[in-house]
Length: 414
Image (cartoon, rainbow, N blue to C red; front, top):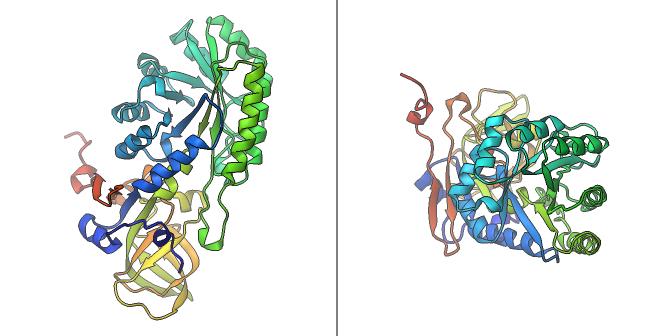
């Protein structure tokens, strides 16, 4: 098979079996060169002088990866005080961050305000809350322009059926609330959804938000969100997002708007998944083989506590197989790969044609750098895996320890 890890020299001078032997199974593995390459692509594909690229921290908040992302010039969005805390620990400055809150308490808002971090609220109710806490302050609002896109209904965050944003028919109410608390609106934000592979919905969303922006004076920034997709079906020839073409369209739109509104206005994009997805793979071990009523099951230690995207979104991840012994030549079998969680839905890959496997083989889940570890849990009291980074020089360093049994009880009271 034409493996992604071979094409990219993902493992460098090490091998998956060596990583498993040293750090245990399952194991998240990240490649620094790929991570930096994706950061640089996002920083350069739009020709506009006052562009800010904000990494969406929820995709992967590992401290060492955040440090790399910051070193490449990206700024960041935070969705919680915890993300703010970790981003500051990674070296980001308060002025580098945008707190995009959703249905949060006064306490959470105060945390961002007290740390000097710009806040975007996504309802008139929350705008009232913000105004009571910080009257006379600067604020941004998240709008729903009616345009949504994404790979699954659960990740479409714009349009008719979403909990996010203030509908544009409430603009007059927004202005009334701003005046009530003497708030200064300095930014507009939106996010249409996650994982778009065609640029047109994003462009339409940009145009719609800019049209609304014309109705506000003295905006300092406009944040168009993200959702930049990556091809999860590379072996099937899925094409990558046409980044160059999208960049050309956005460059023209940004420049035209700035010329008539304010030549210094800042535009923000938020690539989360695009930055980290392809730099990460998840390694696991084959522990059991079973034939149940004609279905060939491959039992592994990659349960949905380790990666939950397939069970949450019916997401597809390609699988690579590394044999512990010499494989049978050209032997492929249709298999369903499952984990070790006590749930029938604990399915990682269903009905896949893959090289025949034996107990002791290693499998790798591709494109696991985004929403992999970030969504992991201790369900079934399983231990969350370690994370390692293959650095630019090929050195392998551990960047998060594997959970221990003691970690399962450390927060209980005696």
